[in-house]
Image (tube, rainbow, N blue to C red; front, side):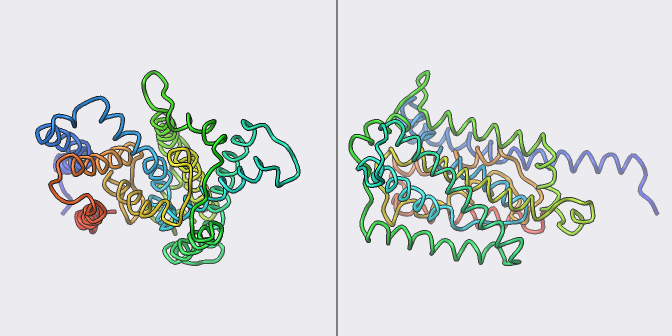
Length: 337
């Protein structure tokens, strides 16, 4: 017996309401956390602390925007932290070599910094492309590919730094510093870049054919192939986008410390994936929102900030808190697609 039209309409409305309620979950959680943080420590609600939280969020948030596309398409990338470390070390090594004249050519300091930034973005795109090709053409699971490159990237950096640290030339560091420390209209540059990347990601995901193809592949890859979607090409592009996002985040991160070590970017992959899943993107793929990822990244940073300000638990347990959040969200999402 078929359901009455009225029952079908009511069921559809109930599903849409439940979906909207689920989508609002991260935002509600962020608001509640902000209220709790303000009650626990008055310094939490200050403008300086807000700028500090958003600036620290920008690195992981930018990477998480790229990770959103990969996860929605049904993939995963465990190597983004190691990739960022190798990109940081490579660009510092290159800029130092250009500044010392080791290449046999003389470059102006501004040109050297510009070359380093371009190199970081190109390296990110190449690493992402390599991941995409291995996954699509090599028919290897994303988990295995990126688990392997995670070790490769960090080992190469350790070799490049001879087990120590690669430190940027002092004169270049002074010139490059404003990329992280400068502000525009009172807002630090990394936050502006984060906003631009997030807006661009949301536009691509929601307003382009490519974004619709990413979601279709994540929902059902076989059906997407039948619909004449170039599945392999789309997957490769998602990993390239993620690689470029890692490059952008690294460009902003390097002037903060002016060096790269074997521990640079440690656990960034955990934070990026946590931001995506907390923001409402389904781990099984097919559904997600960039704005949710942005809220998820800020929410995790707020948790860390509250831990720092209140000492409820040790700040060394921050990664454990993020791990618990990922497991909890995955539990809530079970069976959802």
